[in-house]
Image (tube, rainbow, N blue to C red):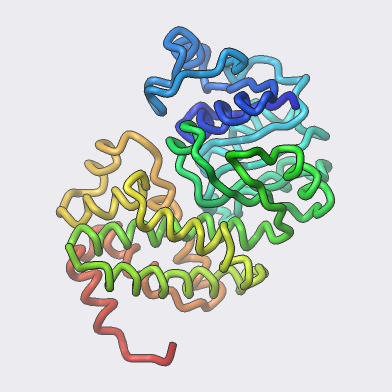
Length: 328
């Protein structure tokens, strides 16, 4: 299958490597010709995914290059860049070509989820969806086993595409609840920052387990309020992605929490990270969505206060522990 992967960050590069190894004809599109040339010259993405050689059948171009022969488009950008990338480079080719968003979060300002941005920008395209689940870029690039969801309202197409893309190292599950998959993928990043805070403060495994469990409850409440199926939160895009991101050393969002626990200011943390941590941009939108739908999300609210600089990491945990006792 001729596949265009738009976005040459760590995750886009890892997906491009994976699908090229699976004998798909893959082109990875970087933002500029200079970026593309640097990747081609090095034979790897030295900036975002170093030490992983690109397969010989993986081509690298700038986003401005023609992608008219693509049979599948994967947009792998930060959520807040999705709309502009679609408008500037993808829309002319994606009126009928199947397209997946492989990003997680709510669009700032609109509160839209990635698949909803796709629908708004490409209203005539009936084959749009999400690729999401517990998957670190480095492990996918290594060829280690993983399982993810391919979610779309178009159930027949989702099942057909999942079967076509399935491989011995990446198992794809078709899912017909894109709202649930998208909310799970977005809000788990918020919880991963919170998990990093508790780990950084050395509060122990009991605290981490409590935070993850109550965090999953918050995710489920918001997802249900937005029209998702609660059962989706028990699957790969909910519990699976939450477990990975809250516990894995490769999690960028968890790294943000660890550094917050050290007392570092957020701008310094993001500069040191060198990658996008979607949870930082997502938390404000989640707070607004929770308020609009009258959904109780105490962990999210306290983390928003912490990221805004109004409280310290220690204050955040104390605020959660001293809440009024309730039934689970």
